[in-house]
Structure formats: C-alpha cells, structure tokens
Amino acid sequence: MLLSQFGLDLSTAITLFLQQTVREKRIPFQIGLDIPNKETQEALNELEAMKKDKGHYKRYSSFEELLEDCPSSIEEDLKFATAIATVDGVEASEDAKRLFILYKEGLLDLETVKKALARKHKQDKKDV
Image (cartoon, rainbow, N blue to C red):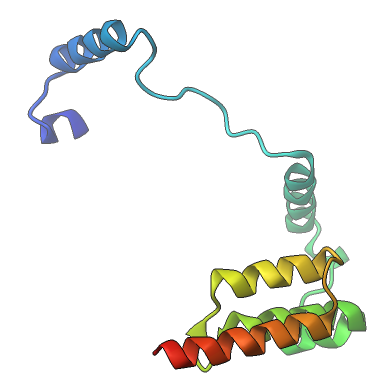
C-alpha cells in the first residue's frame, strides 16, 4: 500500500490531512473532474461509434495510404508540419512550432515561415 511506503498507517495519514487542512484553510489538493471540452467529447463519441461499427469507416494500412485519400491542403499541412518538426535530425524549436501555429491560423504565409525558419536554422548552426 502507498501509505506504508511512506511509513504511515491510515490513522496517521488522516491526521496529517486534517492538520494540513487546518493550517492551509483549504483542502490540500485539487478536487475536480476532468471534463473534456465539446470538441474533445465529440471526437471521443466518434471514436466510440467507430469501435462499434468498424465496417462503416475506412481503415488504412499505412500513413502514405491515408495521405493519398487526403485533400491536397491537408496533405500539404501534414507534410509541412513534419518538415518543420525536425531540421537536420534535431527537434524543432519552440519558435518553429509557434511559426507553424501562426501559419495555420492564417497570420503568416508559407514563404514568410520558410524564410524565418531558414534564418533561425542558420543562426542556430552559428551558435553551435
């Protein structure tokens, strides 16, 4: 049991909980439910429906096969995200990830992002 790993019995653990509650004037840990937002709940519901009716949904044997079925804009986004995920085998910086988000939100065009990434990569290589 977890309490015994700390050298506590149930009575001592409850006493510690009550003392900390009085000292802090609050419950000493967060109590709550992890309730997914609407979009996540819809995705979870869709997943459950897919599990129940597997024949109704198309399955793919590879990522490449899935890409063949994607509209070109989605395929380009996926390829772009993969491309900026690593540069010379190094995981993308937080700056690169932010640039991708700005691109996806339509706040930056693709050429601006490519130039910024190239400058950042060049600077990172100088710093090494």
